[in-house]
Image 1 (cartoon, one colour):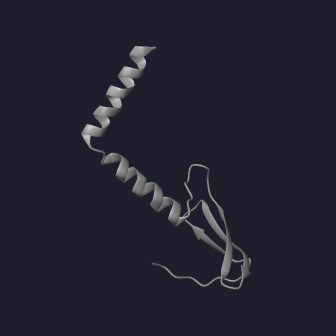
Image 2: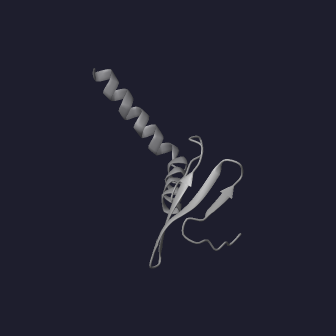
Image 3: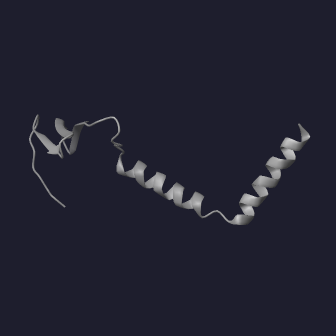
Length: 80
């Protein structure tokens, strides 16, 4: 891990396309701005981890649960 010290209004360049700016420092809180291309996903770590955990849980659903859902859907569609 690279650790850098930055002051207010200083920036960090990541690759050719991503710029991280220090916008505000208030106590132990630092407000940053990130300028990046639209195709670059930027997520808070806790959001990223939640998405990853939900994807893992979804991918590990038991076949029985999926079969039950398919049967339920078939029954619903056949009644229409």
